[in-house]
Length: 72
Image (cartoon, rainbow, N blue to C red; front, side, top):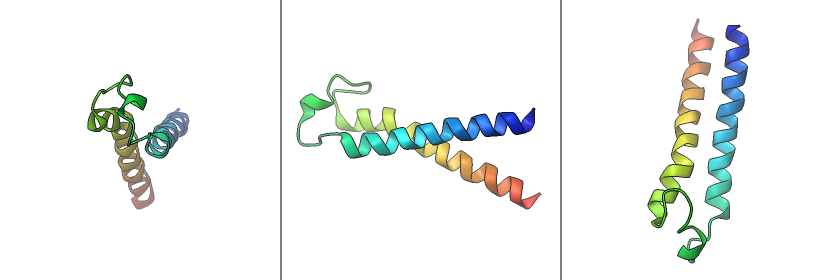
C-alpha cells in the first residue's frame, strides 16, 4: 500500500513539475493579453505563482522523500 502511494505521489509530482516547466516556456511575457485571463491573472507574477509554485513545492517534496528513503 505504501509503495503504491509513493508511486502515485511521484507521478503527481512529475505532472506538476512538467506543468510548471511548460508554463514558463510557453507563456508570452511581452503580451499580457496571452495570460491575463489565466488563473492568477491579470498579473504575470500571479500567473507564475499559481502555475509554477505547485511544481516547485512538488520538486522539493520529491527530493525530501528520496533522501529519507535512502537514509533509512
